[in-house]
Image 1 (cartoon, rainbow, N blue to C red):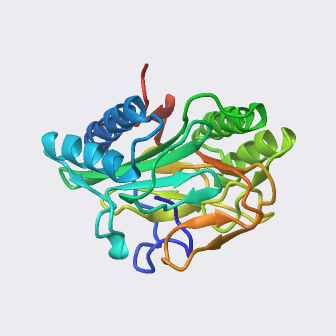
Image 2 (cartoon, rainbow, N blue to C red; image 1 turned 90 degrees about the vertical axis):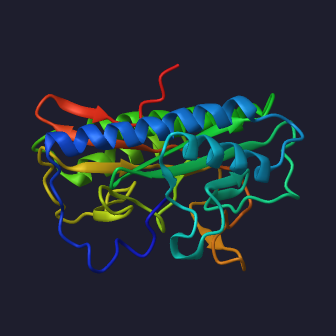
Image 3 (cartoon, one colour; image 1 turned 45 degrees about the horizontal axis):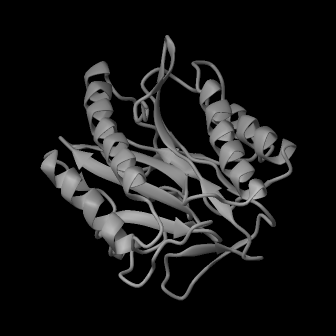
Length: 263
Protein backbone atom coordinates (compact mmCIF):
# COMPACT_ATOMS: atom_id res chain seq x y z
CA UNK A 1 0.00 0.00 0.00
CA UNK A 2 1.43 3.31 -1.08
CA UNK A 3 2.27 6.40 0.93
CA UNK A 4 0.47 9.60 -0.06
CA UNK A 5 0.60 12.33 2.55
CA UNK A 6 3.90 10.96 3.82
CA UNK A 7 4.62 8.54 6.63
CA UNK A 8 2.74 8.72 9.91
CA UNK A 9 3.78 11.85 11.77
CA UNK A 10 5.09 9.86 14.73
CA UNK A 11 7.23 7.63 12.45
CA UNK A 12 9.64 10.22 11.01
CA UNK A 13 12.95 8.64 12.03
CA UNK A 14 14.49 5.91 9.88
CA UNK A 15 14.50 2.65 11.82
CA UNK A 16 17.36 0.20 11.29
CA UNK A 17 16.48 -3.49 11.42
CA UNK A 18 18.70 -6.17 12.93
CA UNK A 19 19.64 -9.29 10.93
CA UNK A 20 17.02 -11.21 12.91
CA UNK A 21 14.39 -8.57 12.17
CA UNK A 22 15.17 -8.92 8.47
CA UNK A 23 14.79 -12.70 8.65
CA UNK A 24 11.32 -12.30 10.16
CA UNK A 25 10.46 -9.66 7.55
CA UNK A 26 11.57 -12.06 4.83
CA UNK A 27 9.17 -14.67 6.22
CA UNK A 28 6.38 -12.08 6.23
CA UNK A 29 7.13 -11.01 2.69
CA UNK A 30 7.28 -14.58 1.43
CA UNK A 31 3.70 -15.01 2.66
CA UNK A 32 2.86 -11.90 0.64
CA UNK A 33 4.67 -13.27 -2.42
CA UNK A 34 2.90 -16.64 -2.18
CA UNK A 35 -0.45 -14.88 -1.81
CA UNK A 36 0.13 -12.72 -4.87
CA UNK A 37 1.11 -15.73 -6.95
CA UNK A 38 -2.05 -17.54 -5.84
CA UNK A 39 -4.14 -14.52 -6.77
CA UNK A 40 -2.36 -14.30 -10.14
CA UNK A 41 -3.24 -17.92 -10.90
CA UNK A 42 -6.91 -17.11 -10.27
CA UNK A 43 -7.03 -13.99 -12.44
CA UNK A 44 -9.30 -14.80 -15.38
CA UNK A 45 -12.25 -13.25 -17.20
CA UNK A 46 -15.42 -13.42 -15.09
CA UNK A 47 -13.87 -13.57 -11.63
CA UNK A 48 -14.79 -10.72 -9.28
CA UNK A 49 -12.33 -8.63 -7.32
CA UNK A 50 -14.25 -9.75 -4.21
CA UNK A 51 -13.42 -13.38 -5.06
CA UNK A 52 -9.74 -12.51 -5.36
CA UNK A 53 -9.86 -10.70 -2.03
CA UNK A 54 -11.32 -13.75 -0.28
CA UNK A 55 -8.70 -16.04 -1.85
CA UNK A 56 -5.92 -13.78 -0.54
CA UNK A 57 -7.39 -13.38 2.93
CA UNK A 58 -8.02 -17.08 3.46
CA UNK A 59 -4.50 -18.03 2.35
CA UNK A 60 -2.97 -15.31 4.54
CA UNK A 61 -4.85 -16.50 7.62
CA UNK A 62 -3.81 -20.10 6.91
CA UNK A 63 -0.19 -18.92 7.22
CA UNK A 64 -0.81 -17.52 10.72
CA UNK A 65 -0.54 -13.93 9.51
CA UNK A 66 -3.01 -11.06 9.37
CA UNK A 67 -4.02 -9.02 6.30
CA UNK A 68 -2.25 -5.71 6.81
CA UNK A 69 -4.57 -3.47 4.81
CA UNK A 70 -7.96 -4.59 6.15
CA UNK A 71 -9.12 -1.89 8.55
CA UNK A 72 -6.02 0.26 7.93
CA UNK A 73 -7.38 3.80 8.17
CA UNK A 74 -10.76 2.26 7.39
CA UNK A 75 -9.83 0.36 4.22
CA UNK A 76 -12.48 -2.37 3.82
CA UNK A 77 -10.56 -5.07 1.94
CA UNK A 78 -7.54 -7.31 2.35
CA UNK A 79 -6.36 -6.67 -1.23
CA UNK A 80 -6.03 -3.43 -3.09
CA UNK A 81 -7.34 -4.36 -6.55
CA UNK A 82 -7.03 -1.66 -9.21
CA UNK A 83 -8.28 -2.25 -12.77
CA UNK A 84 -7.09 -0.44 -15.91
CA UNK A 85 -7.16 3.33 -15.18
CA UNK A 86 -7.25 2.66 -11.43
CA UNK A 87 -3.74 3.35 -10.16
CA UNK A 88 -3.82 2.09 -6.57
CA UNK A 89 -6.11 1.41 -3.59
CA UNK A 90 -9.04 -0.06 -5.53
CA UNK A 91 -11.64 -1.60 -3.22
CA UNK A 92 -12.71 -5.24 -3.78
CA UNK A 93 -16.29 -5.52 -5.06
CA UNK A 94 -18.80 -8.29 -5.70
CA UNK A 95 -19.89 -6.36 -8.80
CA UNK A 96 -16.50 -5.89 -10.49
CA UNK A 97 -15.77 -8.75 -12.87
CA UNK A 98 -12.55 -8.96 -14.83
CA UNK A 99 -12.75 -8.92 -18.61
CA UNK A 100 -10.34 -10.10 -21.28
CA UNK A 101 -8.03 -7.21 -22.15
CA UNK A 102 -8.05 -5.73 -18.63
CA UNK A 103 -4.99 -5.28 -16.47
CA UNK A 104 -5.32 -5.54 -12.71
CA UNK A 105 -2.85 -4.25 -10.14
CA UNK A 106 -2.91 -6.29 -6.95
CA UNK A 107 -1.31 -4.87 -3.80
CA UNK A 108 -1.15 -6.99 -0.64
CA UNK A 109 0.42 -6.83 2.80
CA UNK A 110 0.58 -8.93 5.95
CA UNK A 111 1.42 -8.54 9.61
CA UNK A 112 3.46 -11.51 10.81
CA UNK A 113 5.28 -11.90 14.13
CA UNK A 114 5.27 -8.14 14.67
CA UNK A 115 6.52 -7.12 11.22
CA UNK A 116 4.87 -6.08 7.98
CA UNK A 117 5.35 -7.33 4.44
CA UNK A 118 4.15 -5.45 1.35
CA UNK A 119 4.32 -6.16 -2.39
CA UNK A 120 2.34 -5.59 -5.59
CA UNK A 121 2.05 -6.96 -9.11
CA UNK A 122 0.12 -6.06 -12.26
CA UNK A 123 -1.47 -8.95 -14.14
CA UNK A 124 -2.78 -9.07 -17.70
CA UNK A 125 -6.23 -10.63 -18.12
CA UNK A 126 -5.92 -12.71 -21.28
CA UNK A 127 -4.51 -10.87 -24.28
CA UNK A 128 -4.15 -7.11 -23.84
CA UNK A 129 -3.28 -4.31 -26.24
CA UNK A 130 0.39 -4.15 -27.19
CA UNK A 131 0.94 -0.68 -25.68
CA UNK A 132 -0.65 -1.76 -22.42
CA UNK A 133 1.43 -4.94 -22.27
CA UNK A 134 4.51 -2.79 -22.80
CA UNK A 135 3.40 -0.49 -19.97
CA UNK A 136 3.25 -3.48 -17.62
CA UNK A 137 6.67 -4.73 -18.72
CA UNK A 138 8.35 -1.31 -18.37
CA UNK A 139 6.80 -0.74 -14.93
CA UNK A 140 8.30 -4.00 -13.70
CA UNK A 141 11.63 -3.07 -15.28
CA UNK A 142 11.54 0.31 -13.54
CA UNK A 143 11.12 -1.48 -10.20
CA UNK A 144 14.13 -3.66 -11.00
CA UNK A 145 16.21 -0.59 -11.90
CA UNK A 146 15.22 1.06 -8.63
CA UNK A 147 16.15 -2.03 -6.62
CA UNK A 148 19.60 -2.10 -8.25
CA UNK A 149 20.30 1.28 -6.61
CA UNK A 150 19.36 0.11 -3.10
CA UNK A 151 22.98 -0.26 -2.03
CA UNK A 152 24.90 1.05 0.97
CA UNK A 153 26.18 4.58 0.40
CA UNK A 154 23.67 5.54 -2.28
CA UNK A 155 20.84 7.95 -1.57
CA UNK A 156 17.07 7.51 -1.80
CA UNK A 157 17.23 9.85 -4.80
CA UNK A 158 19.36 7.30 -6.68
CA UNK A 159 16.43 4.87 -6.49
CA UNK A 160 14.02 7.61 -7.56
CA UNK A 161 16.14 8.63 -10.55
CA UNK A 162 16.57 5.04 -11.75
CA UNK A 163 12.82 4.41 -11.68
CA UNK A 164 12.06 7.70 -13.43
CA UNK A 165 14.68 7.23 -16.13
CA UNK A 166 13.36 3.79 -17.04
CA UNK A 167 9.67 4.75 -17.10
CA UNK A 168 9.95 8.14 -18.78
CA UNK A 169 12.71 6.96 -21.10
CA UNK A 170 10.20 4.48 -22.50
CA UNK A 171 7.55 7.13 -23.06
CA UNK A 172 5.44 6.66 -19.94
CA UNK A 173 4.72 8.95 -16.98
CA UNK A 174 5.39 8.59 -13.26
CA UNK A 175 2.74 9.15 -10.60
CA UNK A 176 3.95 11.84 -8.21
CA UNK A 177 1.24 12.03 -5.55
CA UNK A 178 1.92 8.55 -4.18
CA UNK A 179 5.29 7.18 -3.11
CA UNK A 180 7.13 4.21 -1.71
CA UNK A 181 8.09 4.05 1.95
CA UNK A 182 10.08 2.42 4.68
CA UNK A 183 8.51 -0.63 6.29
CA UNK A 184 9.03 -2.66 9.45
CA UNK A 185 6.99 -2.81 12.65
CA UNK A 186 4.77 -0.18 10.99
CA UNK A 187 3.32 -0.47 7.51
CA UNK A 188 4.54 3.01 6.56
CA UNK A 189 7.84 4.23 8.02
CA UNK A 190 10.43 6.78 7.00
CA UNK A 191 11.89 7.42 4.52
CA UNK A 192 9.52 8.31 1.70
CA UNK A 193 10.68 6.92 -1.66
CA UNK A 194 9.42 9.01 -4.59
CA UNK A 195 9.59 7.47 -8.04
CA UNK A 196 10.95 10.70 -9.49
CA UNK A 197 13.89 12.98 -8.71
CA UNK A 198 12.94 16.00 -6.60
CA UNK A 199 16.30 17.77 -6.73
CA UNK A 200 16.83 17.77 -2.99
CA UNK A 201 19.20 16.02 -0.60
CA UNK A 202 17.83 12.66 0.51
CA UNK A 203 18.99 10.17 3.18
CA UNK A 204 21.93 7.88 2.49
CA UNK A 205 21.18 4.16 2.47
CA UNK A 206 22.53 2.19 5.41
CA UNK A 207 22.61 -1.54 6.22
CA UNK A 208 19.38 -2.55 7.95
CA UNK A 209 17.09 -0.15 6.14
CA UNK A 210 14.04 -1.86 4.62
CA UNK A 211 12.28 -0.08 1.76
CA UNK A 212 9.01 -0.69 -0.06
CA UNK A 213 9.89 0.47 -3.58
CA UNK A 214 6.80 0.79 -5.78
CA UNK A 215 6.65 2.46 -9.17
CA UNK A 216 3.21 3.54 -10.39
CA UNK A 217 3.49 4.23 -14.11
CA UNK A 218 0.82 5.62 -16.44
CA UNK A 219 0.22 5.24 -20.16
CA UNK A 220 -0.88 8.88 -20.41
CA UNK A 221 -0.71 11.80 -18.01
CA UNK A 222 1.01 11.54 -14.63
CA UNK A 223 -1.93 13.32 -12.99
CA UNK A 224 -4.34 11.33 -10.82
CA UNK A 225 -7.43 11.89 -8.73
CA UNK A 226 -9.13 10.10 -5.85
CA UNK A 227 -12.70 8.89 -6.33
CA UNK A 228 -15.55 9.67 -3.95
CA UNK A 229 -15.00 6.42 -2.05
CA UNK A 230 -11.94 8.15 -0.58
CA UNK A 231 -9.59 5.38 -1.65
CA UNK A 232 -9.57 4.48 -5.33
CA UNK A 233 -7.00 6.50 -7.29
CA UNK A 234 -7.49 6.82 -11.05
CA UNK A 235 -5.55 8.50 -13.84
CA UNK A 236 -6.89 11.95 -14.73
CA UNK A 237 -7.18 10.99 -18.43
CA UNK A 238 -8.54 7.49 -17.62
CA UNK A 239 -5.71 5.77 -19.48
CA UNK A 240 -4.25 2.58 -17.96
CA UNK A 241 -1.76 2.47 -15.09
CA UNK A 242 0.53 -0.30 -13.81
CA UNK A 243 2.02 -0.88 -10.35
CA UNK A 244 4.78 -3.16 -9.06
CA UNK A 245 6.28 -3.25 -5.57
CA UNK A 246 8.90 -5.13 -3.58
CA UNK A 247 10.05 -4.84 0.03
CA UNK A 248 13.85 -4.65 -0.11
CA UNK A 249 16.46 -4.80 2.65
CA UNK A 250 19.67 -2.80 2.24
CA UNK A 251 22.61 -5.03 3.17
CA UNK A 252 26.40 -4.94 2.93
CA UNK A 253 26.11 -7.58 0.20
CA UNK A 254 23.63 -5.55 -1.85
CA UNK A 255 19.84 -5.33 -2.06
CA UNK A 256 17.93 -8.29 -0.65
CA UNK A 257 14.45 -8.61 -2.19
CA UNK A 258 12.41 -9.93 0.72
CA UNK A 259 9.22 -10.35 -1.33
CA UNK A 260 10.84 -12.11 -4.29
CA UNK A 261 8.08 -13.77 -6.32
CA UNK A 262 10.03 -16.79 -7.53
CA UNK A 263 8.50 -18.56 -10.50
